[in-house]
Figure 1 (cartoon, rainbow, N blue to C red):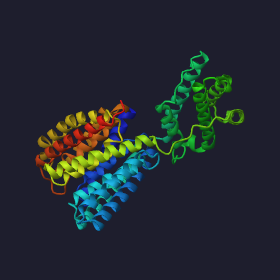
Figure 2: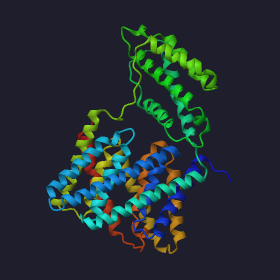
Figure 3: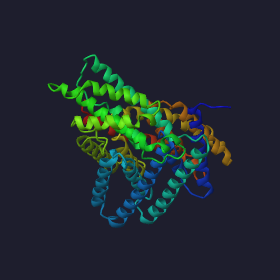
Figure 4: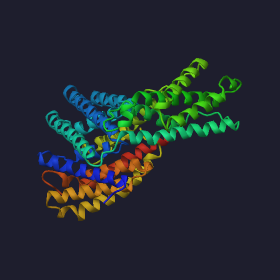
Amino acid sequence: MKFNPATQEAIKVGLAVALAVLSALAFGWDKAYWSAITVFVVAATESYSYAIKKGQNRLVGTLIGIAFAVFLLAIFPQNHLVFICVYCAFLALCVYFSSHNSWGYAATIAFTVCAIVVCSGGFDASTTFNIAIVRTLQTLLGVVIYTLVFRLIWPKKTEDLFFTLLPLVISDQKKRIAQLRNNNRSIKQISLAQQQRVNKLNEILTLPLNGSDRLRNQRKIWCLMMSVIMRLESLLTQYEQADNHADEIMLGDLIAGEKLIAESMLSIKDHKLDLTVWLLKTKNRYSVQAQRQNTFLLPLKNRFKNVVKALCILTTCLAMWIYIPLPGGYIVPMLASILANVLVTLPDNAIKHAGLGTIIWGVFFLSQYVFILPSATEAWQLGAYLFLNAVFIWKTCSAPSLGIQKVLAGNLAVVLPMGALQLTPSYSMETPLLMMMLVFICVGVAGFYTKLFSTD
């Protein structure tokens, strides 16, 4: 039986999640859901090479977060005010770097892990150290299991993503040149989607290309192609924004560049010299600066706004926990820290989608926790539960617009019924329902500050 690519991807994720949890339990590690969360998050990327890079970032972030958690508990165990100030400073640093092109994900994971390790250990140094070791091992296990499954079963080449994105970039340039030929010179910046596609194409060429023979054997030529595409993008943007000096850039050079790129797609080797000549000619003729790849995805103003927003969310939730006080013990600062760290990096409308998704997925998984999991007495039954849910999530949320729901559902699938994923299973609705209530409180606080800082 032959499955379509989306079904193949869903099956691989299901196998990786089930194997990760069962392997963690077989090793005698508690909180086996941590390895499953690693698989869910890493698998949400577009290609195997991207996933491996994300897995590496996750491991680096885990180690940094653990190190900082140990530092906090070792240096400021009794000085609560200094502890909170340093903790908030680390949040500010991680949120600021969360939009970094290369290490943004590692920064996000660093604070998330720090919050989990500090709060799960009840702010006790010895307990925290044990949790830190288990967390590191489970993250490593999740990455290894994912790598094996996705490497051996229906392997997906990195070049498939490259040659999916490349025609979209070329098509966008072709449409803009067609508008210019019709004297429709609208003043606009390069679209964010186009910029992200160009950046991603360049990044793919820096990744390991094992199994991607076409890219690996002709990497230099494809790098030349990307240089031409980026040069054409720069000239296009300059021409579209030109006012009184519109003739400084000749439309004929833009048309020639677009035509050359289209012809090179058919046989890039035969057009290597032509690409080089066009690139050198436009560099000598025009002083337009190439579209440089920014170190950060967000401008400085937005990065600082996210930092302030995250600090407001965290400090408000901590104040509610201390002075109301909210039930749940150390779950409250842990959830507040994680949501303050993650939600500010998402689009403003993502909070509404996250709240709605939490309700729908929460009811779905809690129903299984009550009616299905108590009857699962064998390891294979637990594995089947994880496999089927992972496949269902990946198939249901296969559309790119549902990427947030995919990660959210994957986390809830193993966090809400986490009592059943322990070495000694326990079934109590108190913790899952309390966690759901606290999530809504923290999301409500995040929603308030998101609207307060909204630029609309």
